[in-house]
Image (cartoon, rainbow, N blue to C red; front, top):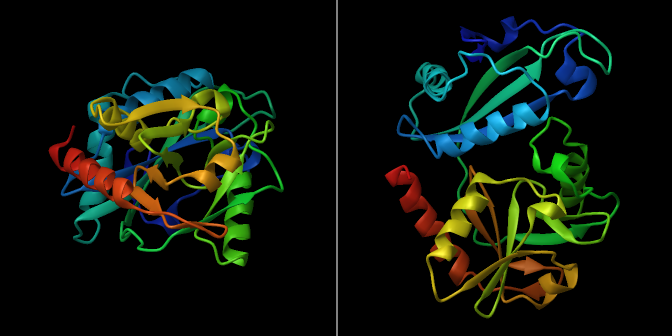
Length: 277
């Protein structure tokens, strides 16, 4: 079952018109959310990011779109699915039908989709750089819009080359993120992650990991511009997103990495998820 504007229905019964703006113009945003044991993980962070994105894209936020309302809609949709410990939720918000580039209205529709989350941390995980196209830096790139063509092409490249993931670059040839998450680079006691000004998504797990390191005096965390050459010289690399939490990287080109810090941060993040922080 899926949830369309608060109504549960079978996916085959969902009727979206040819004028759907998410389809025609990518005029849509989404949140990928984890639900564990009937608890929406880091829900406040997701909600406030969604609200900020809707405001930036001039979408009209319904008065009913409260923190509590959307949380209940997510849990309502999860409740009719098979019993599982962990679910992957996609909350999609898009402007109502009509108009060309200029919409007829800024009012919105929403869809909530539910899938069982079966992801497990991989013991080996390989990366390389995707160079065919760039993710342009700027504020719009920090929003999770439905335009994921670059991520799609990079994922195809990874699949064709027996890689687990690809690093995306911006027009300045700086590291932005990977196809499905943010990236952290460890060298000695310095942890680096691309600054938001580089064009990376404002990741929920990214923010939680930054919070963890801000309380750890053993390491210094920097949000900066990162060159691909720094990946080659790193001691350790790990990636983050709301579903996987933390995934340590074991290889980049011919370089092999240790995974101790990434696994420790993964454990810390799991504790935060369970605690509902």
